[in-house]
Length: 301
Image 1 (tube, one colour):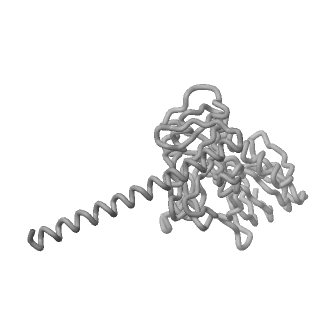
Image 2 (image 1 turned 180 degrees about the vertical axis):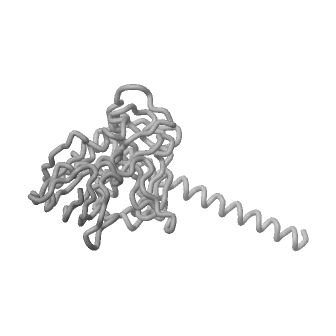
Image 3 (image 1 turned 45 degrees about the vertical axis):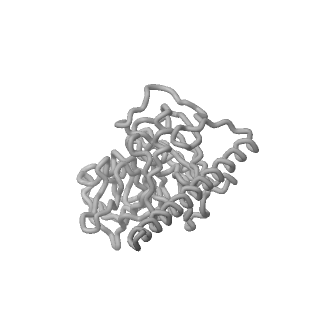
């Protein structure tokens, strides 16, 4: 046997050993995941079905109404936990996520992007108002490296609680988000017929405001998340007729009024939001409820 042949056989043998070792390690991790999941199910008296893809799921509440298609927009909720109950991340109830059902497998967690196909597959089983749970084995979640920034260790199995909101229209979700925000912050607001909510913090006694008025105002605009997207550094002139529709509620007030406005998305920047091409980001996301503090300094009628 010549030297080249011996070297080739040695290379093949080494590759076979390494492949077998990797395969054995992978199978060992799968086995550890399976044992941990079975232990969790047994100790918590939980019944789940094992999908052909290897994850476990259960439909808690199927929901009602027509079947949701991949091309349908859905408003949904999620909570990621470790099997010991430690919460990792969850969706907000005041900025409820929405996307097409076919894109519900995409998440940004700890600053990194992930695609969890089982989440989309399980959401596809639900109708409006439905809820479900699934367990992602570690190799389908954050793998051997985990995600230290949110508290996920190596080879951690992940429990995900999912829900599809019963509401299917954006104006219904706007109402729900405002209700949730006001409740969470112990605030009471008046609901105008336009659907704008407002809280008067100082009642004005000056000149009245009309739809054709030009106002001088101080203002701060926020998303319900608290992010400020705009603010006046001094009194700013605004023609009420050309402002966003939600500001027309200022016709209810007089000069000197200080008021907080909660504006549904269709009376704000709607489905298009406000995009900053310089930085390539939305300063106001599509379908965002707006939260303004406004002081009416003067008016020209």
